[in-house]
Length: 133
Image 1 (cartoon, rainbow, N blue to C red):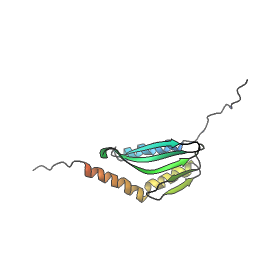
Image 2: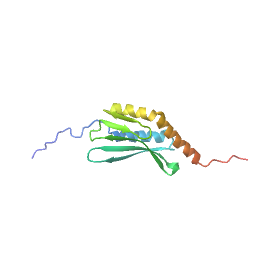
Image 3: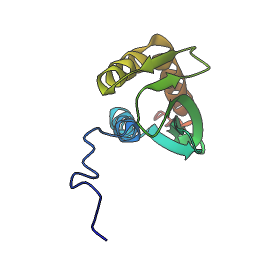
Image 4: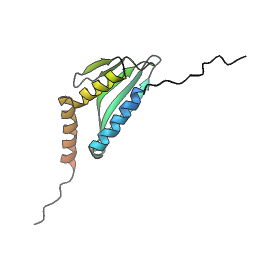
């Protein structure tokens, strides 16, 4: 029996959305000098994939906050970005729209407020150095 599979099998050129999310998780850690960490937790069923983007505060006993989640089929696009707390929802038909939507969401005032609040809580929890007498 001859091989009937095409020679270009597996030559899919798009970056998976989960890879984009993991890169942004790494950027969060770098931008906050490790005070916060981004974490992506993925799940799936027979029809779709879901990726939850968490903000984790190691100094607060690994407190985590789900900032948003992304839902897509095996084809990646279209995909949906949504979150309950900020009321953000966007459907993206391709990678360029996804990147633009991520940039918009991460710069959103409500997103920045959540990150700032977690950072402030870390600062409050850290033991204050005593002033010399």
